[in-house]
Picture 1 (tube, rainbow, N blue to C red):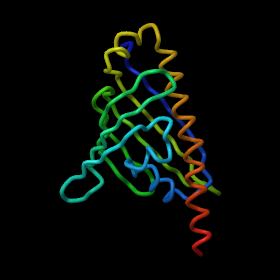
Picture 2: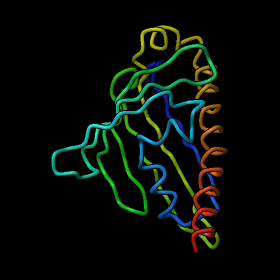
Picture 3: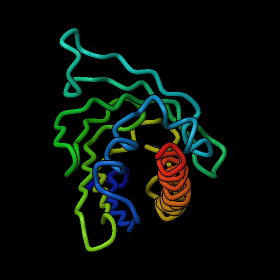
Length: 163
């Protein structure tokens, strides 16, 4: 494994149906609204047939550290509500898989992220700063967990008010 290769597994438990969690996570253009600490911008390019598979999301992201990343996430698999997969290119090169598993009162969420950091500063410094860059990823995912819980609660509350 090269020094700029990374493998992360993130697991969350969300008290909401898998369908709702899936709908929030798959809507990449909405990420900057509900996960603003990490997603600065997101612009989708959808295939002419309107399918989810093949949608390319052009992203500008950041973590806690003072650098940003520009990359594209292309949806390679979409199975509502059990999850989806993506291919990352740009400042990252790799794959991500979101797996959603319903349980008794919510959804277990797992994100498997296997990537090579291609941004020059990350590529050059990973040999020495890999623990710091890994911490930065964990910080970003912790913000995602907090914000996903808030977004789920917002949507469930809106549904309850509408009923």
